[in-house]
Length: 491
Image (tube, rainbow, N blue to C red; front, side):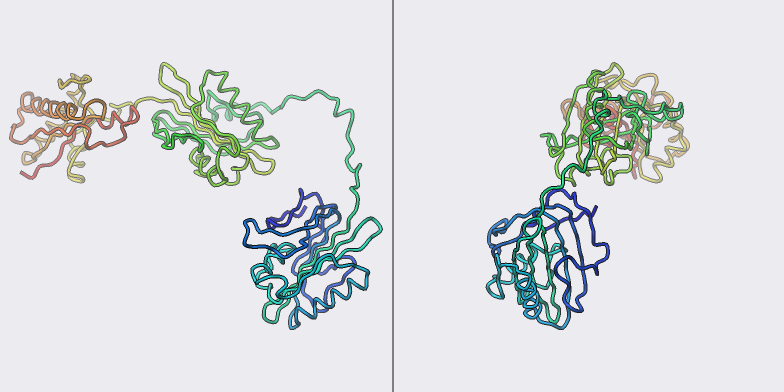
């Protein structure tokens, strides 16, 4: 089947005809091509609807206005180019041939009667096989005629235009005919059968392990890509139709999957995932269906934010999206699923995130590491000093980090430091600045008292939430912001 994007002015029904002009040199019925003409394109549709203009085009209106004659039948559509001849001579020869065959005029225009250049180009475009007459709209002629045929009316239309020494002919022939029915036979025995549930081969243990244990794949789905990351930060978008535009920034165990499913609709896949999440106790945070997911570009961008590959490729048609959440004791779990199609294929992009705070203490701090950070960046970030919420007394588990700071200072007797306290953005800003200063003072006091570091080498400061290292919208981000920094002093 030949598929083509047509001018908005050419009204064609679903492409059910068959393309019959693989060889562009083949002439349509009734009329041969002009001598020495070069075929530029040809199409044929068995039983198709075509609209033939019966007036010049009013291009001052949006959309452009014209009267038309709708006809259904076998459509033969051609475009020819002819060099070193006038549009008048070509037009007169086609007109003479039409009259010789007994065609009667329905509408015609010549030269200025076809309108200005813009109108002339619009008129030709209405029947242009390639969707445009390009530069060949000058010195225009248009003729539409009809005659009775064995099966019904036969209509023929030509637009002849030129550019310099080149003439272009747009030709449409429509041979009206009644619909040939009965081409499709129904298997009555099949139609009476009960619906058969979707079946799929059982997954191997290896394939099961690749899926997320909470949400295994759709039956028959093929896994394209997947990834699982321990404690990652990810932005999960709301649907384009949501009032909230900023994405959710979440931190936790992240799993991403892309699946390909054959011979199923995006609707069926979507309804099954939606039902599964509802049955599991999820609530929907945001969702969209079809046009509500925006333009094709918006839908593609939405899916790309979920995809492991940052792209859904061709799977953005007939889109569905849902973002769902369930609260567990261990933290919230989120599922974001984008479903899009291309021809008989469905592409499914999936994110599952189990919220959790970043586990610290897995990497120990030593004096050499601190020295390398200070030499490279002028500061070192310390996360191993712990305080109770809202208090400035160091907890006992802070000792290994204090040991490392003390060793750094003892190995480098000329090193002077600012000890700077930071907080997250929870609570009052001024109170946080005061608390961060108190905590920095506690670190200095511990180093001078317990490790005999000269107080003149250390200076405590507190900046509260005003120099964050991460976001303040997630537990993991807040934890990164609650820190002490050792900043090198010059004197």
